[in-house]
Image (cartoon, rainbow, N blue to C red; front, top):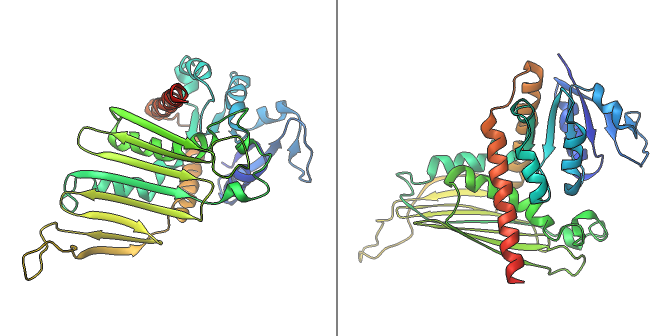
Length: 325
């Protein structure tokens, strides 16, 4: 069976999804929908009803349109792949929670870092013998999008529609990854800023999560040179990803001839590209979705519920920062 797919959206991330669907031998794009624009592709349509003939529909439109399309597809019997965040406000989230269970199990929200090597690393080495008890985790993922001319005037830079676009489109991946591996923190802090002055949406954010025995820091930005770094520091060793290299050093009790602590020896070193990891995890996420459509298998309800928890926390973080503005 080759799955017929309709997609809402045609540029940027939607373009990447179209490519992944087309290179998967079990799927093909039947329609590319936009409510108004026409473009040079025979699959282009301005008629939403055309999508209903597809086995699956991908929602890769601006964030604030996600729920309206889910609502329009309420009677659609096929599968839905929706980009994160699932919705853009708490009212929509509450409505999403009330969907019937059979509908929930046919919707897949693309938190694709659940399929990443980063996730596997956190699972394998958090509180491991090599690292010991986790003390701190720090993630830095940023690049210079805010200084590209296509950013100015785009929906990503439009603070009137969404002041927290960076949080919703980039930070949310790491937020979901943290919740999946460590649960909800007892305290969370959010420090957003506009640095580039090329839009009214925050282009830089810093998240801090306080757990009982350790803290997690996540910095994302559209205003810096490309950076993809991770550090997991434990009581017996540490894991670092920097300059496309993963390195683990252990044990803590490593001394020089004067019995002073020195840098532990390298026990693992290999190439690791965080940008490539994102691309690979996206491909795996698409593959996971298509395999369920092909086999007509409903998604586990816990996938939907985890997506809801991540989005719920997202809104709580935004609410807290508004109180401080």
